[in-house]
Length: 199
Image (cartoon, rainbow, N blue to C red; front, side, top):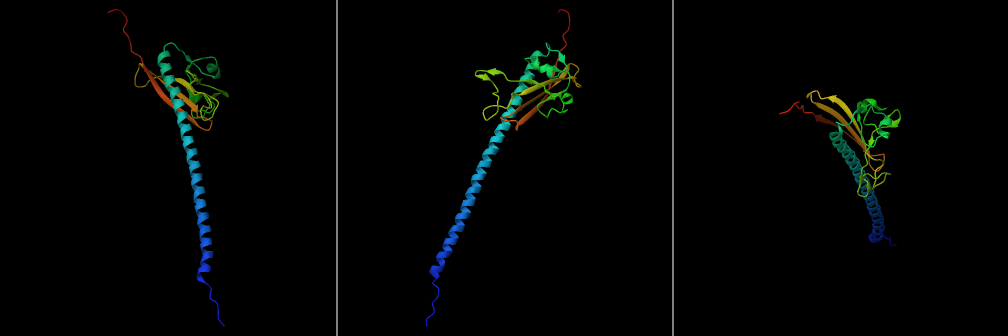
């Protein structure tokens, strides 16, 4: 009697099928991981862009406040600022009380700034050629709210008798309230003494 030996080619066919299925599963998992990575990179890029928008809006309002201060420091009087100060005015105010010592949170980093539970600060949203500069409402092409500015008189500069320091704080959201930028600067104005009398 003759014994049959297994044919090597027939056994190899089953092995090729299993190897092919395993390779297909590995390639599919790699493709899914790559697609997930691309989605994550897109979200990161969007978040970075929104953060930059918030920072630029806050810096723009801070620049405006510095320019406004230069032009209006002689004609504006100091005010003890409260929530009522900013609802009754169409321009910034020079506050005698420091923001970080006055707000409910005792910090300029916690926004919106509140005194007695009511928001404070000048809402900076100038009108441009096609409407307000900062379109509000949230979303990819607008801001959650307009930037806010607070100017505080810090008093006479310790290094110069004829200089007064002002602290300017500004903050802005990006497209949503999840992205916020807060900026702060010390702005100094120097006065020159003029002699009385004629030449």
